[in-house]
Length: 197
Image (cartoon, rainbow, N blue to C red; front, side, top):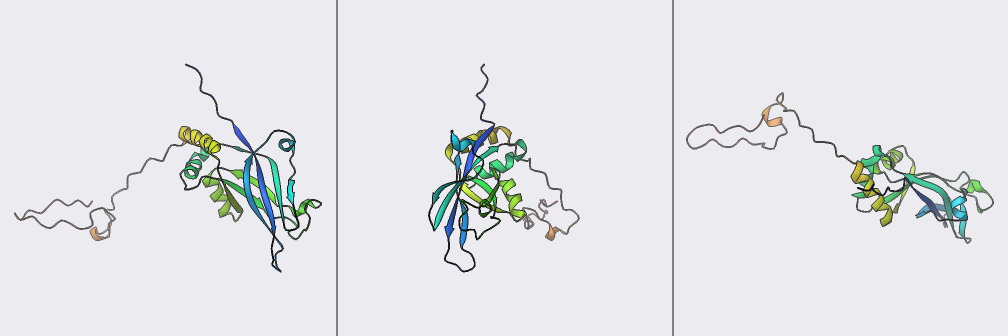
C-alpha cells in the first residue's frame, strides 16, 4: 500500500488591500480588504513590504506578500465551522495606518495599514473580534476549501453529547423535559406511567 499524498503544510498567500478617497470632512481615506490571493512565484513572493499595484488620486491597491496560512489540529472545529458556513472565507486581521490622513503612502509607509494575521479558523477570527480587532473576510477559492476540508475531515471530532442529569430537585411543572403535560388518566382508573423524572 502506498503512502497517501501529503497536503501542503502551509498555503502561501498575499493580501490585497484597497484605499478609496471619501468625500467626507472627517475622514479622507477608507481602507478595506479587496481579496486574498495565492502567492505567485518570482519577485512578489520574495518581497515582504507592501507593493502598490494601482495608483490614482482617488483609489489605490496594495499587495501585501509574504503571508502563509498553516492548519493546526486544535483549530479543527473552527475550520469545520468555516466550511459549513454559507460562504467559506479567509479571515484577515488588520490594523489602521499610523498616519490615516497620509496622501501618498508610496513615500510614507506609515500611511499604510498593517496586516497582522490571516486565518481559516472561524473560532480564531471570533476571538480576534471579541478583542475589538478589525477583521474582514474574503471568499475562499475551491482549491483552498478542498485542502481545508481534507484537514478538517481528518482531525475534527465533534464533542459527544452529554447526558443531562434529571432535574429532580425542581417541581414537576418547572422541569425542562420533553413531556411537559402528564397524560390523562386511563378509562379503567389506573394512573398512566409518568414520563417525567
